[in-house]
Length: 387
Image 1 (cartoon, rainbow, N blue to C red):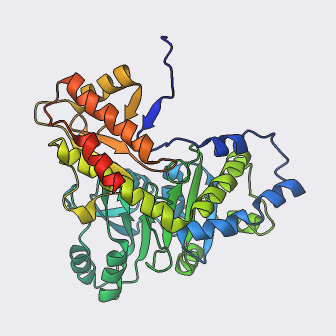
Image 2: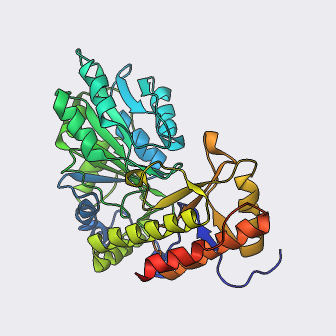
């Protein structure tokens, strides 16, 4: 393999770049996860996680990815044959749907344009027609990583409240957590699903559930089989600073460091930084004469920008040129978007100069791959960041 100088630019929307501080924190000897040193590590960590989700309720940590968090949310609150409602939001929403169906839940999917945020009015109409309250849960992705479309979770809760529907509200926050504002309690979410490998700046391997009191009440009567994902086993062990089985100790070291870093920057500053970088990226795409996949500025994600390539172009061929020529990885199109879009991740441990380098690599790649575009995207982004 030919030697490549400099660092590889990893600009997929997760896993994200792991900062040196977190890498150094992870690089520690394993300790006894049944001993007092481990309790000292975790005694306030679970409490500090509540600030990330903006909740006063419990946050559970599983050795898993976000997909494990999906499953934990379902099996701890629902019973075989229960009905759940969700939108066809994108590739990852469909992944959550698949997990639900494998557990023999009845999934009703509202047809939806992947380019748009979820329609709370459409949801309200669907729920208002459910006079018998057969829907036990509504599943929504806050920030659909495959499309770069963000949805208004507060409006979803308003829809539920407006029609007086008792369904649990479950939200996937995997690519929004610690990058975009998420308010578990204020938005009335019952179960949130998160992962370590995006805004939290860690390697993959930790999955999260933030749970409301209503969700814990549902857990008491839920009859889907569970063992590894059992909330009660986790909560009981967490009470004394432990886990019910071997935890990902070194990732927990890293989590403590990432929480320190986020607290030092300040959550509002973190969200503002991501908004600034997201806006600069969108201005670059517009200046190139290319099309951003989300329709309308309110639907645009601040953690990932999904870009349509012109008709007749192959986004994967473009990505291959950029990887080969400039040692930079961009996100591929997933599902029905394969070959039609590329995705620029701008979340986690990421700043203005890193974005400028990323956009420069994209602009050079567009030219090298022969994709029709207008030069000047990097300049447009720089002007946005400079102002």
